[in-house]
Image 1 (cartoon, rainbow, N blue to C red):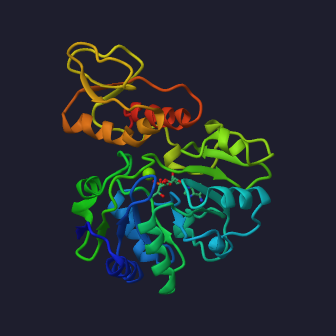
Image 2 (image 1 turned 120 degrees about the vertical axis):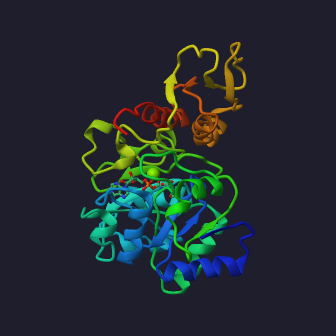
Length: 322
Ligand code: TXA
Ligand code: MG
């Protein structure tokens, strides 16, 4: 296993071949790094679960190169889903749709639906196109972290979290830091009305302007097995506290306009909430690197990207059962 930094065309081709041969390839996306395997290869997909330490039965997102591949994997696609795909793909949005034959139980966790996404990252789109040229159909990829841990937004974090579980022919492609920094918005498109299962960069407000249907986001109503929807996730070792006054020796994350109280360790000072999202997982990891017992976040207002940030922070805060 190696981190490959200067990913030129021939390296991307080799990586596609590695996937085709059943190895794992971690790759950058615009959201977070993914841990990829051939989505039709049961053995390769099984290795994703063992490397992540993820309980089996949790479904995986299949990454495809374009909207044209949508019908290879999904059936009974509602019009609103087509409209969303046209508008937001490639991009940080995953659609859950009724599955076709090709989406086996080992991808969907036995459910009759499949999660699909066209990622917006030139290196990964090139990887997908090369993989498809070799007869590949799609790349299954969860975030490239151990189950319950913080998602990686740089290649080194993938190596740090998963390196010891990789085999010789597995690869990590380094595409630099992920520009969005939090996982894709997941939308259940299996019903008449779309439902947001996980908020993300594609916000409720944005979505609402593209679909006439009622759009809901109610976690309690979510009936699908859904680890990203679990209450404890993305949890560092440090205690995460929200909107309390930070004490000397504790870590602190707030917009740059907010000053650091005396003796408090400033972890990051994003200039706006997009930067806040981009650096969120770095901040959580940094708290552990500095062995802080507590990190305090000043949370954003709950609209736009603030909804997704707040969702991740709530989960990072709930570490007791993890
Ligand atoms: O941004 C992202 O979505 C990243 C990058 C790598 O694409 N991927 C990602 O995958 O976050 P993962 O597995 O860490 O989180 C995906 C979530 C999981 O909670 C999974 O249960 C849910 O999506 N999911 C996947 N397929 C599903 C399905 N068919 N039905 C319901 N939930 C599904
Ligand atoms: Mg994940």
